[in-house]
Amino acid sequence: MYWYPPYAPVPMMPYDPMYLMASAFQWMIYPYYWMFYIEAYKIALDAWKKAFEAFAKSLEQTTQKQ
Image 1 (cartoon, rainbow, N blue to C red):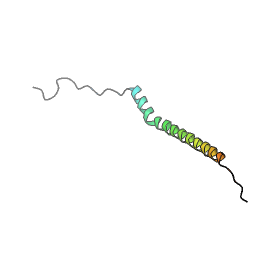
Image 2: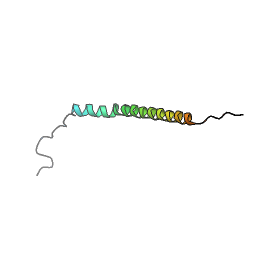
Image 3: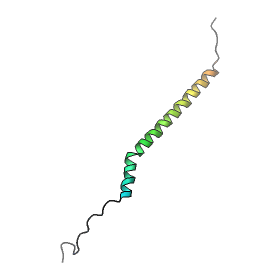
Image 4: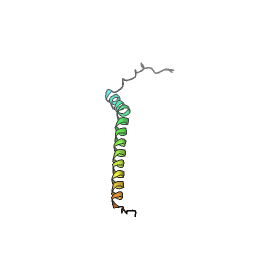
C-alpha cells in the first residue's frame, strides 16, 4: 500500500494567456465603459428634462400686471 501516489506529481499548468487577457479586460476596461455609459445616460436625461421644462414654460400664458 502506498501513502502517496505511485506516480510523479504533475506540476501546475501555466495560466492560459487568452484567459488572462480577457480577465484583465473585464477588471480594468469594463468599469470605465459602464461609467461612460451611465454618464451618457445622465446627460441624455438632463437634456430631456431641460427640453420638457422649456416646452412647459412656452405653454404658460403670460399675463401683464396692471
